[in-house]
Image (tube, rainbow, N blue to C red; front, side, top):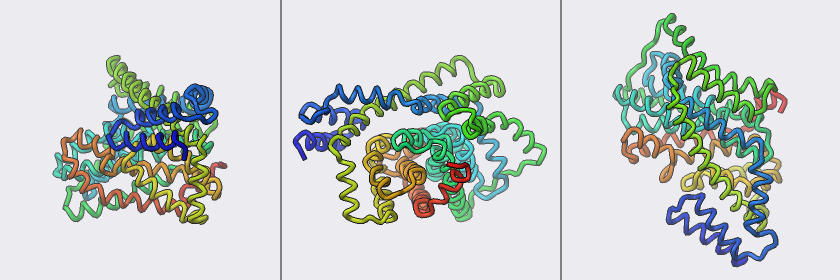
Length: 431
């Protein structure tokens, strides 16, 4: 441990404790390190050169702003309304129907945006309002909205999976396919929990539409639902790459909102573009700061040190997966998901490769793990979003969401130790 590295870690801990934004904190710590280090290559100029020639020219990264743009379009038009209505019709006359609708709508929406925050802020607003109007507890309404939003980045497309693929070299196509079954398992588990709660609290039943009305609603919803087919069909037919599919799906979403639902004006487009630029700008700053942080971690050979330390405890991959899962669940309680992806995943990747753990399996598992972090107090972003849009006290949401977190963690460990649940579809597709 040299002086520069010691200052690097101490300064990062300090900026974290005083709640400076994580991106700024990583940048400050990195600057302190570069100012003090005498190690060859430990200069800001070298980091900038590496970033511009490696990460910032990565073709796969171009998919991120495209998927962000697509999510913004979906949230601004009538698409979210159509998804909610279609999910409501699918659930029908069931006890606690709106709780089930919440989960089903998230499963559908996840195939369009790849973002948990877009799910919670877009669909969440109408879901929570509808549930409160029918007598559901405010805390429960927000909790199931936040918990079901976790599915967003698991079922393809997925922004976190794009970053993981870039860092690990894993196939983005295999990762997308690998998330399908786990996403549905999380949804089924949450619906099972919802059924138990609905019966216990006597939540109201839904309404079953006549066949004729259901068919009419399905036809109206079809243009929005087909965006999933356009996106995944384009990728797995080999017609387009995942990045090109993002552009194709964004264009399709724009056409659907303007032509089919006539719910997208020039003012809406301006707002969508502004929100996209803000989100991508924030992500870009975080990526740049995290790259500098990770560069320091790499040249100081910290991943090797961590691997040797953990291998000194055990070389059993199943125990190691348990240790890593617990470690990432703990990190998710305090650190932003993107920061975890960009900083901590590169640290454990050498260990994962040494133990022969499949990169696709690990990628899907770790994405679900990090999504749990968005729902866990004290700094779960989904908790703040649902609380903000519904004016529900955080303590009410936290009380209701804890059992749901336990349900998702149960699914997480199921997927961790039964890799075939993740790898079945990718292997069927030839990955």
